[in-house]
Image 1 (tube, helix red, strand yellow):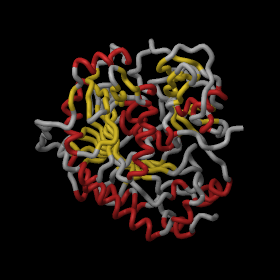
Image 2 (tube, helix red, strand yellow):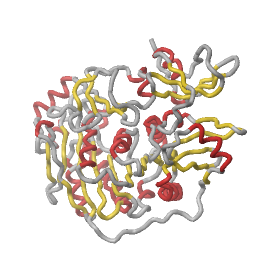
Image 3 (cartoon, helix red, strand yellow):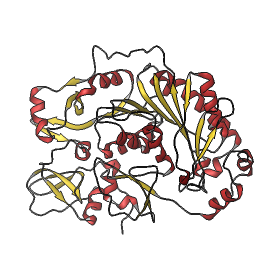
Image 4 (cartoon, one colour):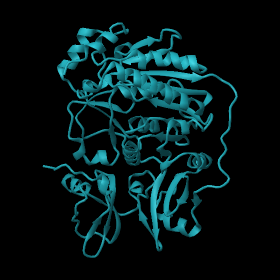
Length: 456
């Protein structure tokens, strides 16, 4: 389907736009596939058809071809994440603008499906808090799944309107808003998006973006950083939003360093000369993208206090004794209970956890550990995929066909295994739990995550 002429006309005057090259790259049909590896789970990427590194990413790689990711057990283990290369530039925006070695409170406001959340988690310190929010319930479930697979314990997944987040006045050091947009930057990767594009939709997105930003800005500390991005080429959703933001709030625009060889186009808005960085697919190895960074000017700082009472309870000594053998002892976490579910969260972030739980609807906090049944723990799937699980727990390694069978939640046959809870692994990476009984093996892979597609 051809690129809408109205889009071409509307961006004809945008810096860096080359109509002939832009149309040709979309008509050419080339697909660029890239992945980003999880530093919590792998040091050396292997087993994928790797090409060059994504130049602005420490963990990103291009692939020579797009494999059937659903049938790679490592993606289900959280070893890597399939992410569009241009959006990985978020790493540069963050690391060039703030000291990531310090404890930070970071909010990913429009986070599903989780690419930017998992990227942010890989960049911030272990003592930092990452709140990952998605307002749409169905998309929040996908976000939760991807955060669980990533395996970190300092993420809280929320399903909350931005206006509610804004009530946490001056709480966050960094807010990332990858705003819902008209999607013109995705035309090459998702040709069906062309049918949904219109000038009217651009205007509707412009208004929605303003509402989200207006709702969320109060939650940013004075001196804190706002990162705004879209996958749109339209000035109305990019430079014009930057100008509106600086008209409406006290922000300074932050320039970023880019290598000329990367092909990224630096632009500035009309009124305030706010810096932005636009990615054209005919000039970079990636899709259409725009990003702009701002620092909130200094001023009075409010303090959000944790509640005096909480829905959460710390684990009793008896329950702690049951759970402790399942965990590595070197990682300082506090164990919590909400109703009958146990979870672990970094001990140093206790006040932050209580504040978030008191103010927002939380889908997942830290690492779910499981539930107590009698004097035993029924382990949660999240524990298997986390960095907290005790490496001394009995584990069985599966071949690829066996691992796919497990991920389809089918019966797994393993000879001569000791009875009890057992970790299932593929190439040294945990996939989940089985329970070995005298006459059968129960597969505890989450039913709603199972592979449904036929495997040949």
